[in-house]
Length: 306
Image 1 (tube, rainbow, N blue to C red):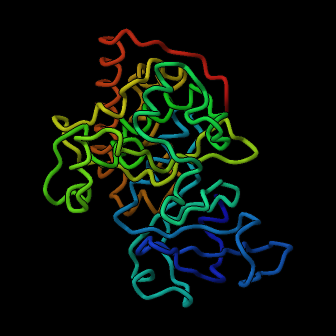
Image 2 (cartoon, helix red, strand yellow):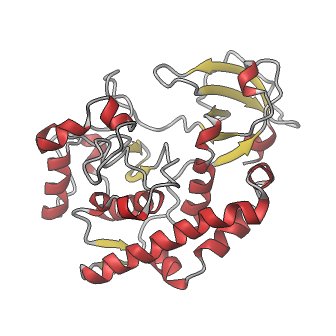
């Protein structure tokens, strides 16, 4: 976190097919190793600068930790002044900086490199129904993902209303015409479930039983009438620690205390007064999720992976 918040930018690189995202290499003061702009990011000293509009991803990181999920990559809000960066990145507006995890496994397929394995919606649902670990025969990348991981993911994505992983086609709600899923003609595929695929399903080779959550900005403004319950489809259990936190009624207060540690985010959002409405939205969604658990008689399971 210290490296992300204060490390000096020593190099930059565009991320193909990801618009305004820059990958930067960082050097911390007092680091015994020299700054080497030409090195790759295999040593874990890199981060992704995203759009200012993605600052919600920093809130998502803190939510992940408060809930005890521990699947999101570290994220901070930061203002940049490095002459290495384009002006649009140094104009004084804070941007989210996400740690670049060098060991996340990606498919070699350039059209599907945001996954560790290819998983269709129907395969995913069948896997949940059958309690089978492996979604596809011979698919070693996702064969070891523990069943409880999907409950973690569904809970997290519902609270944040992240659709890109489990429902990038917006099948679980009626999208506006301006939604990317409509503009890119993805929503039309909802008529044929066999054409639906999950994205951002990622693992690390050294910990293949655990998912890695990326691109967690979600939708803070998603109205309650359009909450996407499809994200919960097929899930029959949720992690005990996260559910206990929701039941405590203290989620918003705990998040506020945690976010205070990120002063760039805190000040840019107007402090407690500016952040509180957003945190109340998360609290309210948590209560809606608890009601869903009760109505569907879903179980809570003890956390087994950390």
